[in-house]
Length: 480
Image (cartoon, rainbow, N blue to C red; front, side, top):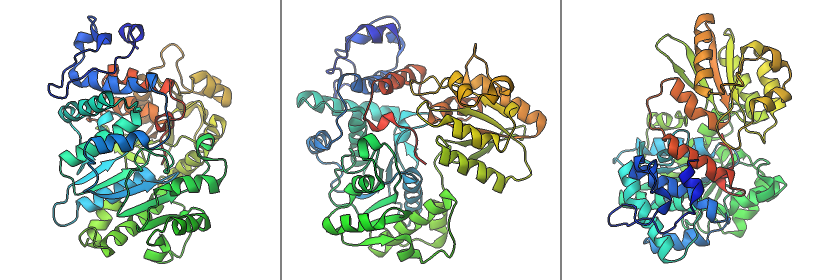
């Protein structure tokens, strides 16, 4: 973090919605700050909010902000998606299929966290919110917070920014992914969703959501609303959620088997399971007249999509295949390595791995070392407060100390990815980049992705934000 940021307290009253310029942001008057763009300044301020406003899981702030901004979601058709795993993928699959529907619908999508750019979190028909639009709408939200003494958090303000963006850009349908849980999530201000979707329930964030599957299910079930249908994926406690839907007087409780029939096999591929959930959701929406009728081709076009870094395969100009996946815990890593063997049984693999410190690094390393040798594992360390240090990874998997590839003097992710890419090219290997979401932006840069990317001055503030969070959605890693 720059010396200017560390030296001065945060000034909440910083923007004029009429001029979109900084007025009273005393933190940024030094020589270094004059090089920041207006967009960088406003996003930096957003990231600083949680340094000063304690995180409070609840709906009061979001409800007030939403009302004071004219209730932007009230006239938008909303599909609300929650779940322990799969919610990001299902959100994208549903949105992409509806985009292909007749009538040129404008489809908003809100997801979190992002990979490379803050602007990924809110998009319409695949186009990210622009820097100019952030500058137009975000100061309006800040002004409301200031005028009405609302201590909104990063996620609350980001969610409301998305809602305002969708209204101002006249979206027809918005597909919203919850950040954490459901009942108290900032997205859960929607009173009449066209459909609530709960993808899966697993033990996660137990300190916040509860220490049993049943308790977590009830938190996720908070997005179920009176008179509205709910669809649940196969890996949920149906008895708990059915009772929750009954108590909340949902119109119907549906499963994928209810809509598509029994698949006749156990589905172990996460993407196929997510596609089946999305296809079921689209069928319900069509049946209820929420969206136009879709051809099978339109449905498949949508449900075949995946978010970035979900078993994402790319190939460089030299023909080297690189696969990116945010497998960040033992089950996800085991799934990744199993799918590698299934899809590329005759290939050799080279891994670039970085982990979050709060994961079971030893078990993740075990899965990797079952499909490749220690000398083919490159260890990296993201510049992020939650990232595991290279030393932590070596301690968890001692065989990597003498045989793994790492550089304690230069921990650059970009350098290590480029080194691994060169060796993979020479040895005709597939390069697998996996682990924490926090390493993916630099990895994608090293691979030559041409995409929006946060500048360093924004990224450093994002790290400062998360370092000081405890119970916020932004304090947790990517969920497949």
